[in-house]
Amino acid sequence: MLHKLKSYIFQELVFIEDPESFGEEEDLLQAGLDSMAIIRLVLFIENEFDVVLPDDELAPENLQTLSCLVNWIKRHQQE
Amino acid sequence: MTLQRLNPADHFTLVMDHEIRKSGLAGNYCALVMELEGIPGHAEIARRCTGFAGRFPRAVARLSLHGRQYAWVPSGAMSLPFQVSKPDTNEGEAACMQQRLLEIVNKGTPASASAPFELHLIESADRSLLVLRWFHPAADAKGAELVLHHLFNDSQTTQQPQAAPVDRLQQQWGLWRKFRLARQAVLNIHGLDRYASVLPVATQHPADRLALKLVRYDVRQTEQIMAHARKRVGITGTTLYLIGCMMRAMEATGATQAGDAYCVPYAANLRRRKALSPMFGNQVSILFAQAGRDMVGSRELLFAHLRDQNRTAIRQELDHAMLPLMQAGSWLSLEKYGRIVRDSPGKRERSSFWFSYTGEMEPEPLAIAGCRVHGMHQVSQVTAPPGLGLLASNFQGRLVLSYNSINNQIQADWLERLTQAMTAELLDLDGKFP
Image: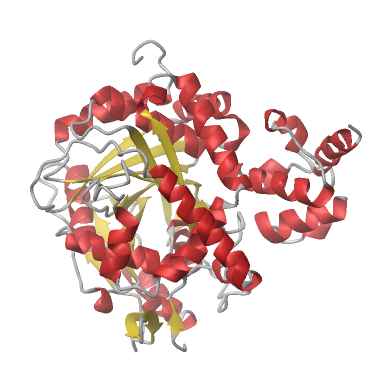
């Protein structure tokens, strides 16, 4: 899951020199994930991982880092 | 350089060029204006203009019609045009420099003879404006920022490493996917056309020239505005907050061409954030924000509506859907395409105002040719109607709003009241405007 998220974010949404070295706890919003990109990312996650992420949970605590994202997705996969 | 066809988004801006010229204005020219402390060396800038043209021949190409479609062809020019002017500053330095800037943006050249990019230096005694004027089919605003970066950066990059987003997306899609997306876009536009758009105050005079009014917010005010944006629209939308505030400001100011709803096209940027390429080509699709006048009266209702509309639009892939439609349009004549793009079935202009928000410059230039950059702003020609465009950007944590309007159609006192109402809206001075 982490690898797929990382590839999508850095191939489609945000450019960084060395995506491989981007850590799970690094700040995605600081890296450049903007409003439009966030919605595209959520759409990608819903299609790719067969999960529904509620719009009212679009908040920094769920999107700030890759590990936040993974936890958010897993919480909803268990529902 | 070989012949390079315009992508569908470039062609769309060429249609806007045609429409702007038809209004009596210069053409679809924009400017990125860097405000410098001091005067940079002319020889240094000229050297960079020549070096840049050598590395990127497309920056000096010219438009040419090939069959039924337009393309960039080599021009033989060896350098980006570079001009220095020292306006007489008797009537106030800032006003005279802005007047010169507007002369540059209002100078018309036939589309086929227009340089994609020109550099101008407007000097006063101890400061200057470095103006990158660009012809919109050549690049979008983020591309223009990259041109400036590569022009004054010493990296000597010569190529664009990856396929441009618009081309890449189109290559990924099969024919049926394109049909499906185009149909989505048509349905979306038909939905918008159920309501007549509110248009700004306007007269029947043929358009004369573009005027510019800048409103700047300091770091503290900008932080306040961004906090209000997060509160009202959530993590997903400074753009929507700015658009919503402008709708409310227009409503508070009063519009003489009343309609049922505000309708605002805005760019869905397809670039990867922080990528240093591609410079050339418009890498955007289009989305619309539309809100009925009944909603505009309430901040809560309006922003909740705009947020939901934006999320639904992206879930329905409307951010991509305009591309196949624009591709189909690029086979039409500019005249016919222009009519289809601008008019709703009642022959009424669809856009209440033009809008663009580019956020912070990326990368942010701290100095250009040895001079510290202390500010920036943007300028863009608009069609008439609506005769009004709002360009928003941030520089070093400060928001700048650039109101671009048609001089003899949008009255100065109306614009003044509009900008005051906009400030009150942005800063959420509750109670002042219902």
